[in-house]
Length: 118
Length: 113
Image (tube, rainbow over all chains, first blue to last red; front, side, top):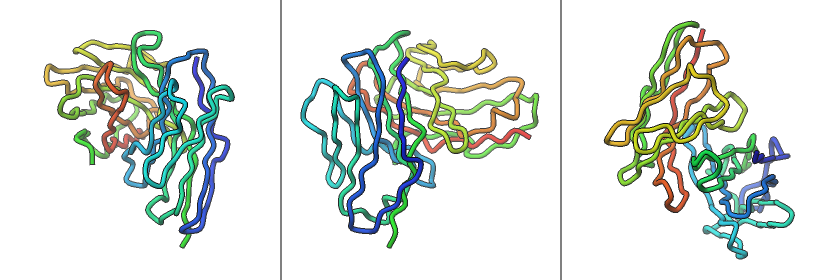
């Protein structure tokens, strides 16, 4: 079974600075996707960034980038120029497309609570 | 905002009762997945519906059941509610076999007393 581990329950950063959130995962699969989702107090999960395992190049989306280390099964999220609106829970998630049982389910970590301070 | 809507947003039920939660999928999507998120935890996969049939299930008892309708909207039913069923229930809409991107609704907060 796949597992996702986020070892930092809480983190804080000053506005405009850079922060990195850690995530490790365990799988025997070779083809999979990794995601970072943001969950603000409004509760809605918002996709921040996605990485396909077959791509060596790290994904970037504006101020958000990942460091994907496939051999180490590590997938960290870097937020540059942090903004107050980045304050939220951040979840790392794994998906094995058409995995066992045929479902495309997401496996989530327990999350990291990020606070951006003014 | 995504095109995924859930209703109701909040609900209070008594232990032993039954509850139905609803989710409308985003236009163009054919798959709905349901997740349970307990306080302070990450979401846990309950089950997924594709083409009106259950397509994979997590570690949840049979009293958790669902439906998907021809318009791809979905319901989650929970019978014989227990206190531990208190959680945020999230619905995610996606296109099966597509680009693996799921869009979530805002969730239903269920409290069992």
